[in-house]
Image (tube, rainbow, N blue to C red; front, side):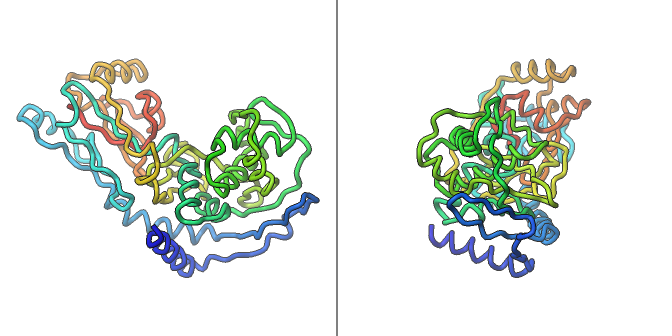
Length: 359
């Protein structure tokens, strides 16, 4: 494991040198307060450099995200496959670089069923909570490294702490409200540095006028270790272009996070697809298989999208894959285009990063 950490750290150092990433004080926008902890060392990443680096990463990664055809089982199924156009195959394989399991074969799925394999849990945009915990636990990342990995191009700022904030229909002190949010999001078992990163992300969302903090959930009676982690970074927030960033997060990302544009159709330069190397080994939501009968899939698709589906189940869902292997859109029944996030909800899948085969 130490070799993996050294390799990742070496690669990160090389990338930083190549990108001329700069670290500068953000004194003009930092407000000191009287709480008993020191202000953080504040870093400012060049988003143009990071975006360029990620763009070069994606060119090589796309080769690993190519679609693969079904295994031929019999002549009838082989004939059905011929109705699919290039790029409309129902099964895909994920990048081997993150240890992705091979797509299921037809032999693993009962006749008359779809087998969906999902990677991660949630929309996949922004910080992966399980990924943050893995980076802290297995590679020694501190909360700043975690935050700058998942939100590249942002700046960490110590803000003036308000006396009262609200989230999830509850109001109280920043310490109380953010501690309850972090307790709900990460329980009390994740690494301290991961909880600190979650604190900053949650506080930033609460302070962002467009953050949608009402959707956050407060879990009562957070234990002392959670409150201590929150207290240690209280008031720190991520900024982008002089304003609070949109620091969304999800449970896990299945090897890569998703770009905000691919999932939400809104472009945030710091919410781009980044790798999450430990998911294949440590994320319990990596490679979850969900079986749905052909009749159930037909019912859900026709009910949700008002399309008339043929008897050829292979023609029902045509997937378009974006950054990180997430489904950006899908064509249902050859006539209706829907977003990947919509299709995930209709099918009841954990993640928008999925593959499927039909038995």
